Image (cartoon, rainbow, N blue to C red; front, side):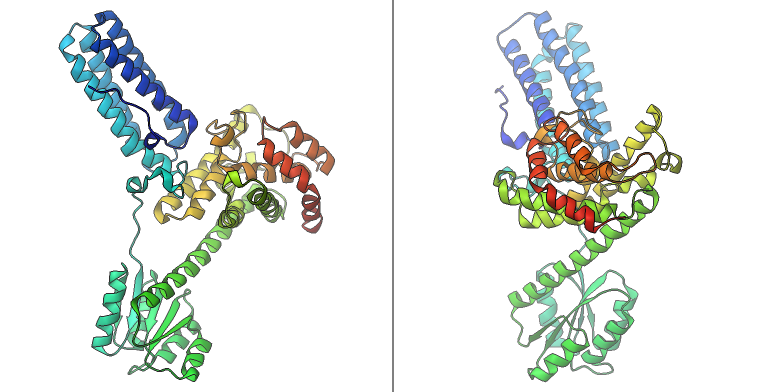
Length: 479
């Protein structure tokens, strides 16, 4: 039986858990060596007992981090099942069943290895700890977020042309719903809210493409991205279709790659539109109950933009791309979405919270993380993954004494570290039901005092460099 060596494929993206996994593997190897060298029954039993105890400890630490996962109960059941089985093996060995030694080691090694790779990596990735953009880790085969096929209505009266376009679209993975004319296409778009893309010809009986576009834009039951595919090549036809509300125009014969790219662009537009609407709707919902000042969301968003842009330029080792800056800024309004689950008597209390009330208030980060993690798992949207990080971890501290998970240092997602500075500064300099507004100088003093304890030192340094910009935002966005 070979020694099990740690490698990067075991990493789940959380240093504390990676350390515990290393410890488990080390204990397994120690058990293997003790058995292989014929050490005394008591020595092997002691190592086996330590391994089982440490596994139980590790499971509890791990579950604190991913208890917001929608499949948490199933994973918890797996943990309990393993502990039960491991205790039974330990008891059998301590009772004198020496023949179980090799079987026990093989079972433990295989279970730990497979569980880390096939379950833990997936869970931590789905919660955003293992960054899907880090291709060096090569974990894509472990990610299994289900996505519905995108529906496309194809309006074309000529059967041969419909067949050609349908084959092109189906090859790209789209679910194609055919219509022989504009009337059929309009009815389909009205009946199914999942339809957001229309590919249409212009010359059709009963209702042509122009009337179809006009009716869709007039009714505007939701935004539908419209691509016109026509044999008409006169620029006046193109201009008319676009002026009525079409988004794009292709002339026949259609090149498959060109059609694919045009629809892909449409999907990106729809995705951004949907996310913006979702983010602001959810943010307004939370803000309506949080009893915080009127421009809090706008100010924290502006502060986050200032810091994230600066870090992207000055700290390339943080790997903050321009796209990531936009994603962070987009989702910052959701940082306190979990407050929808906190009682009004706590949210609006004018004085200091009791210890019990404060513990209840702290749950808003878990509630928000739970809401957004489920959206992320349903959509696979990286923007929603960052939203989860911001809501769940913006109260973590650099020294590990924050909540809800007690993450520390670089183990705290960078989006949450940025949000922490933005949120604290605005809270300090704004009036609340329980306090008067502090001056900029007092807020700066408190933030500097938290350098390398509450906050990432680099972010505090960035704040000091950028404080004039913070003051300008505060001035322009007064309540």
